[in-house]
Structures are given as C-alpha cells and as structure tokens.
Image 1 (tube, rainbow, N blue to C red):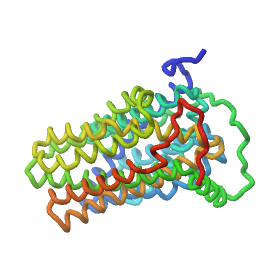
Image 2 (cartoon, one colour):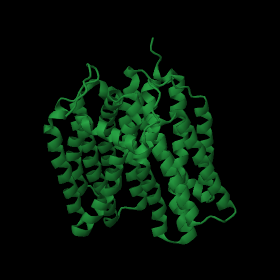
Image 3 (spheres, one colour):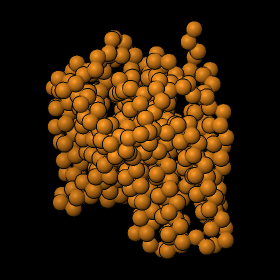
Image 4 (cartoon, helix red, strand yellow):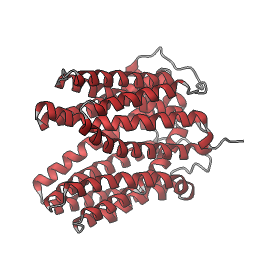
Length: 409
C-alpha cells in the first residue's frame, strides 16, 4: 500500500527543512543590497553583490550537476547547509563588530550561489527515490509551491528584520540553515541503483551529461520553450515595472504587483497536481504560452497597480502545471546516475535566460516608449507560442499515464 505523501517521513523532512532554509535565504538575499548600500552608499556596489550570487550559481551549475551524480547526495545537501550556516555566521560576527567590508559580502554571496547550485541537483535527483512514481508530480509541484512561498515570506521578513538591525536577517538565515542541517541528519535515502563512477574526469562527466540531454528531443525542445519564454517574460516584467513608475504608481503598489506574481505561483502550484492528472502534456505546456500571449498586451491598458498585480497573478497560474508535467517526465526518463547533470544543465539554460531577459527589457526601454516595449515583448511571446503550438515533439509529448518511450533524434 502506497503511503500518502503527507505521511512520507523522509519527503516531509526534506520539504520542511528547505521550507525553513529558503525563508532564511531570501531574508538575507534582500538584506544584502541594503547592507552594502548602508556601508558604501553606492547602488552599483549593492547590485554587484546580487550579481555575484547569480553569477556564482550560473557558473557552478554544470560542475555541480556532475558532482551531484558522483558524490553522496545526502552529504552534498548536508554540506551545503553547513557551509551556508558558517558563511552567515561570519557575516553576523563582522556586522556585530562593525568590521564587514564589501569583499566579505561578495565572498558570502558567492558561497551562497555555489551552494544553491550544488543543492538543487542533489535534491532533484533524490526525489524519485523518496516518493513513488505515482506521487512524483505532486511532490514536484509542492516543491515549487515551497520555493514561491519561501521567496515571498523571506523577502518580506528580510526587510522587516533589517529595520531591527543590520545583522538580524543574517542571524535568522544562520538559524534556518542550522535547523535545515539538523533535519537532514535524520533523512534516509534508499540506496542508489548503481554506485557512482568516480574514475572519470569531471569535464568528461559534464560533457557526457550534456550529450545525453541534447540527444533527448523532448528535453531539448522543452528547454528551448523555457529559455524563450523566460527571456521575453523577464524583459516584459522589467518593462512593466518601469512603465508603472512612469505612470505614477506608488512604490507600495509596485511591491504588491511583484508579490502577486508569487501569489499566482503558489496557487498554481497547489492546483498543478489536479491539472496535471487531467490535461494532456501538450495542453499543459501550450496553455501557458497562449495565456501569456493573450494577457501580456493587456498591460498597456492597465494603469492601476493592484489590477496589474491581479494580471501578474493570472499570468503565473498555469506555469506550475507545465513545469510539473515537464519536470516529472524528465526525472522519470533520466537514469539515476544522470539526474544531477540534467538539473544542472536545465538550471544553466533557464539562468541564462533570466539574466538576459532584464537586459533585453532595458534595451527595449532605451529604444521605444514603455507601452511599445510591452507590445514588442508580447509579439515575441506570441511568435514563440505559434512555434510551440505546431511543434511535432510537443504534440506527441508522452503522457506519464501511458508507457514511456525514450525519444531520440
């Protein structure tokens, strides 16, 4: 008899430990630029710290995925939590003794980025071993809800804690990593299907993983979908924020707008298992693109910040279902010894799009007025939607309720 996911001890330990850890992480992440600006008065330096965190995660993505396949994944997760706790403790001490400098903050940000790059493929690769296949889609969607909730609550908490004291957000981050480390000590992972091969070179392992990912047409096509959509949507997001400011929308309303994107993501993650079980993979994936194609041009007409927030929430509602469909299939398709490299490669692809998207949005704002920039982004999304709709691979995307086939070029 299959144990319900809510009673799965080890999944609850993993999920709960990261729910706590992500709150602390996002609380410290929002505090980083605030601390740097307070110390230096330079917004450029403040942006540098966040840029280092993102760059470190991106650069470490492919090696981290390979290491997650070579090393003990439970130990990787424990090590990441321990290292982040030490890094946060060093920053708390430096802020308390008023010895913190920009180099220290940059180093801590880099450590957090690398740890996140290591932890994510290790956790994703463990998931199919912790839950039965029939519950994997629900587990994937609940992890997505956890991430959205941690980002929302941690960001709000970080600002409030910083008002109490500069070191307080990082002290909370320290405590959450200690709590997560303690919980993971009790995590029991089933033995791996085959012992990892540590005899080959890391570079060869990375290349083997990339070749395997590239040869799977489903993975290659869905990766292209994610990259293209993230590129245009991140550009659209920046354009809308700037457009709202130019229209006189208050900063409080803009904050609500941004938060509503997270609310939509949480609600979408909660309904994703239901929709995943009832919609075909093709409908699950294409519906996201069509929803954005219809909704993005409406941003030109919406001038109220709260209505724009509602539009953001609606845009985010269907994405978790598509992500659940894609991620579940990829985890089941991929052999255990390659799952870390799969997550690492996908993380790099989406990370590049997330980094280039705001740059594209900024370029558009330099070339055309804000409302036209919105329409350019909408046109880009619409063009991609047409390509996605007629794509033969997506039209025949395997349904997990039927026997799976390994689709090659």
